[in-house]
Length: 106
Length: 366
Image 1: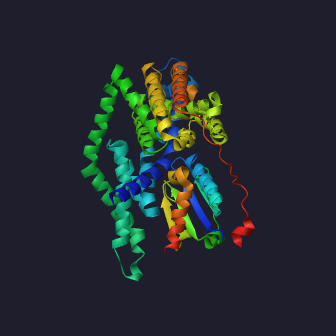
Image 2: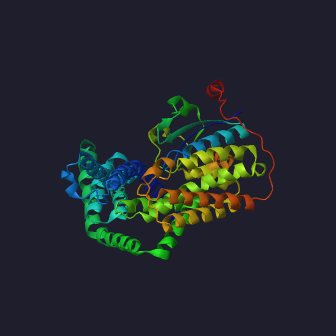
Image 3: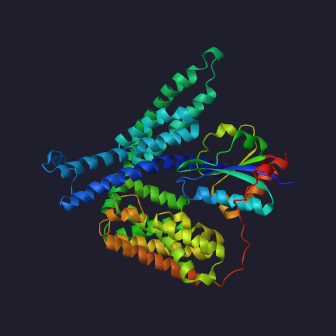
């Protein structure tokens, strides 16, 4: 059974880290055999915006951010793991398993 | 606990910085255009009010442009304060923090004062919202009346009477000290800034150095910015160059990263170097620190001046002594490339390539 995860990435300048973290998370999820959707909140605005449906489907939310998450109210009631934007770039699989552990231990 | 507070604060400040950067870029570039334009007419003080009535229309325009750029730069203090406040307490803190930031600017407490204004306004508003509970019928008084009035009052009083004076002194002290630096001391300062920028490539140490350098632009102090902007682009260029010069030492993934690193370097983004720093930090960071420090020190030592917070090639036309500036970048780049190839032992194993763009919508919704 593939696990389902959503994530938001954002960094201060919004041109580099944001997208590197997003692609690291996608790669990591793929290697682990999980599904992930990633919204990027970069300098040009929000891309791949997560819909209400995505939020409902996902088991857990990852915020890989150095700045404030825009429109955070969407995720009320979800279990959220918040890490610096660097964390998935360094080790995405660890971030994803940390997030999954949050729900598994519940 | 302390660590958690630290990372909270860092997040708020970075949010503020992310909203401030476009203003600094716009303001500084417009000012630089005015000043470079003025230099074609042999004018070195285009901001002087005498030029407002100049008979030459272009000189008049350049004078006005300098003023417009100044408006944008001046807004950086209220705006960074406003968005630090926003990061802490959402919309509620924007008004009090704007006022606090402008006050901080006016009393000369500068960038630090503006940071403090944002933090004070944010936490004051948050506390008021959390702790003042009115009966339901009157609850709307809190956000529409109490928070704006009390929040602003707390912020301006603290900034003006408590924090303002020591911060203003600190600010003047820093500016005087930097202005007084000359010769080898100034070169040493440039080398330190360069090393900080090259150390964590877009991380907190880098941001601290770059933002301080940017904030000093508003006071007309350019050497730290020159060093920082040179240092920003050296690591991505140097590491990109290394993957071209020593192809066999890098796997496919890093060679790809090398190409995008070169492009990111040219447009002025340190982060292009991160894939390399993540893969083998101990072999990459010494090279980027040394290369950036050398580049920054050379650029300042050779007398080039970058008045804009822009490191990409599109900003080079506004630089005073640009050939020496580019020479400094080249030397720094070669140091990074040479050292990182040298430090890198022998090639590593081939990794499997993972495609990331074949997301299956049907499986997601199942």
